[in-house]
Length: 336
Image (cartoon, rainbow, N blue to C red):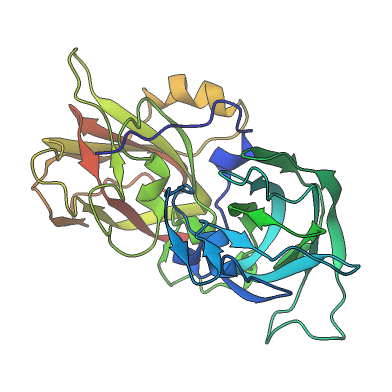
């Protein structure tokens, strides 16, 4: 099993906001000027880029990312992608991992809002990241402050080369005012804007996997902590995309068989003020939303009658006893 290594230099926006360039959420590449050496779709792969020595295809060395050929004319290369949904950009990571003698010296980003169809010759593009210098085999984190929501991005590289991954961290744009107040929404779903505030441990699997759509594809696609060798339990705190009243809960231990938690509980509260760091201490004293429940291996657990009436909430704390792995968490809620 691979140990998840978090980049200690990654800024806060990489943990707070979903990557709307993730194909698991619906993002996709649409067009590019050239992807002779490595096809553009690889650039959105949610897994970390890899390097495979000795692997070649008919065009040359196989690389895990988007790579254009060496440009012998004036100009630059570009790639257009559709985000999983409209969002207000908070930051990006232009990752050149494993590209050393073939990375672009510079890159820039433009955004467009095209709610229907695809960008065309009449589309208005807005600069969201001016040209920045790139280094080989490196992450390039850049905060973005632009008030407009975008549905599409265009990555420009100067003049050519390879980009291993492009991550686009953004706040999904939801028209909650127009949403049906009687319908149920999964308000912690990543595509709706839910996010992980904090967790005490995510040694084998990121807590943010709990908020992904669908069921886990394998044991690595979930939140899994290390084996606890001291008293206590593991936990994570999640912010809802919108205040809501929880009516149904799903806890899915898909693929976790010899390492699922013995039981779990959920605390919740409506929080205003303070900081996300202060929530860690406050969460210990939140009222119980779901009393402690025994869990089974590789199983979808549904709760409705067990849910305590707390009214509108903004945050939850999932407790697992004592440790282990959970694949997905769903909170089907009415908007408050």
